[in-house]
Length: 247
Image (cartoon, rainbow, N blue to C red; front, side, top):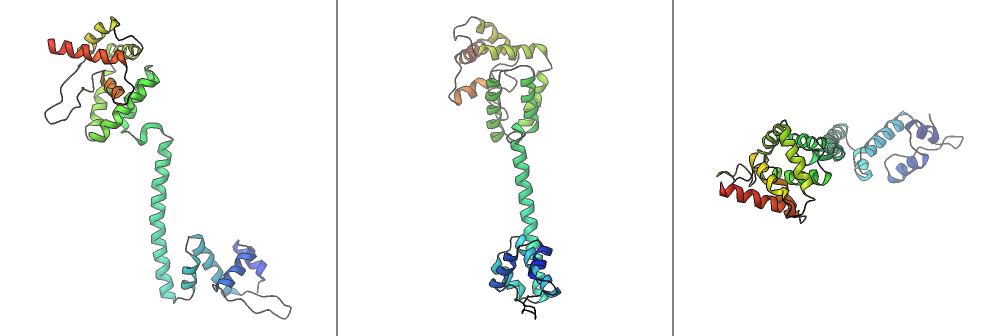
């Protein structure tokens, strides 16, 4: 037979917790022995293990009180139901953990893997942080509107960066963000942009955005839409359109 202190230590609970279980009617309080101590037998230990296990599983004490007086069959069925509920909660927590981990993984939470790889490529070639962020925002909106097409578009654009001339063009346009709107260098840049696709109308089925994703100036539209227009880029688009229409 065990004292209340020994039982509490064995179960990893406080003496106060055991007394609280007595007060709630979850566990009958044993009579005192001749020496004035309350002694706990094996049945009490089993009951306390059940109470603590159910409590640790998040079962309310009122529900535990109900289960402690249930038949073995009913108790077993209730435990199975609690276990099923825990499985659902564990699955939900795992999904939450996955999303929390994704928050620390940069753009993976918002974009398909192919786009994330593309953005890393843009950083690797030395594109400015602001331009990369603007392009990322563009892809986020495209992914919401064209979820099935975006991965292929991103892979197509990745392939363009195998061309050194295209990489140079991208970097030049990035630097052009700091040029004046009337900078004469924009004329030559517009010719280069159009040589790599330039401005294109969308396909009849809407399979492509207004600007082809292999057109460098896609980021300009996003800049304008987000309230951060870049005058030099706006002029670049105008020049590209003029050249496309005159051709």
